[in-house]
Image (tube, rainbow, N blue to C red):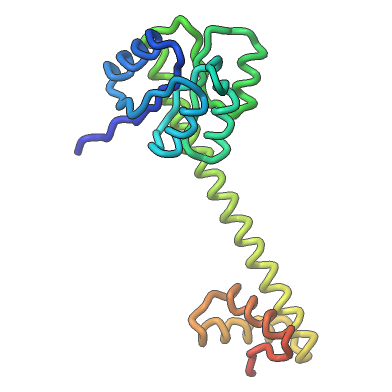
Length: 200
C-alpha cells in the first residue's frame, strides 16, 4: 500500500525563494498543496486546505509569519515550520513562543527541509495525542465528581451508606442503559426538582 505524501503549504513572499522551496519539496516527495504570498492568505489557505505542515516565512507583507503561525497553531490546523533569513536568538524565541515546531534559516538546502518537517509533524501528532489524553483524564475526573455528588445526595436524602448509594446508582445506570456518570447526573438533576428517579 502506498503511503500518502506529507501535504505542505508554503508561505513565502519572495517568488524565487518560494519556487525553489516548492521544487525542493517536490523532489523530496512532499505534496505542495498551496502557495501563499503573505500571512493573511497563508491563514486562509491553511484553514481551507488543512495541510499536514506549513512552511512559513517570518517576514511577509500584510501580515507577518509569526502572527499567522500563532493563529494556525492555536486553531490546531497544522504544525508550522518557520523560515527566515535571520538567525538571531530573539527571532528563534519569538517563533517558539508562537508555537512553531521547526525552524529553517536561509539560505537553506534540500537536506535542511526533511528533518525539520518530519520532526514538526511528529511533534504535532504527539501534542494532539497528549491533549486528547488530558481531555480524557479531565472527563473522567468530572464523571467521578458527579458520581460522588450523587452518592452523597442519596446518602443524605435516604439515609443510605456509601455501598447502598453506589448500588442504587449502578442499578439506575443498568436499567436505563447509561453510564454511571450519566445516571449520577440525572439523579442530581432530578433531585433539584424533588424527584431523583431512584427506586430501591
